[in-house]
Amino acid sequence: MTNPPWRAVADAYWARELGCREDELFSTAVWMKPHGEALADYNGVFALFRDGRAIVSFPADRLEELAGRLPSEGLSPDVLASHFSGQGYRVIGPAFIGYADSVRDAGGDVRAMDGLDRGMIDELRGACSEMEWEHGGSDLGDSPCSGSFEAGELAALAGYEVWDDSIAHICVVTHPDFRARGHAKRAASHLAARAIAAGLVPQYRTLVANVPSMKAAEALGFQPYARSVAVRLGERTQ
Image (cartoon, rainbow, N blue to C red; front, side):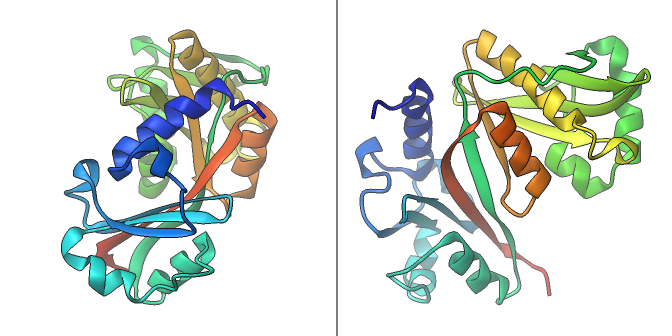
């Protein structure tokens, strides 16, 4: 089967991020390696999983210590996450990573946001928790944004960061009063189409446990690339 066009962009990005060649991605059942240049300053563990294979990247000075605690066979996103969760570190994942060359139009009252909308964006931020905004919020000064509206109110905001001049990493946040109404999907659809028109490949990443977000990714046509787990070693949660 021929790979979709987005696959080459994704492979190139993740190979650079993990410090390996593209043909080394998912080349063995489990590959435990030191961080490459892109992750050299990251005090954590980062792993990608696809088709039953894994590549796990560690701080170089802790590779032997940390890798030695993990199973060399049967390593899955859940196994890795549960291993480090039990040690009290902050674990992010398992997360779905998907890409698309085209997205389905989700309809609704959606449009591009501009500087005149800053007040509405500030109101949306104030309605969300600090963590919700950290994970899904966007600033007009940093990236293009699209909004989904209900009765004239900003119900959801989507923005993207450009990674490696090729990938549009999408973030979405929804007002607490308008959740479970499809607004995040509509905003993400509008923004992803704008990213594609700009010559970028849109990336959708969400926690696998976030069922509504996973359903939105599928409905919009984002195809699965890999699942990730990130462990921040310097942040004990207990």
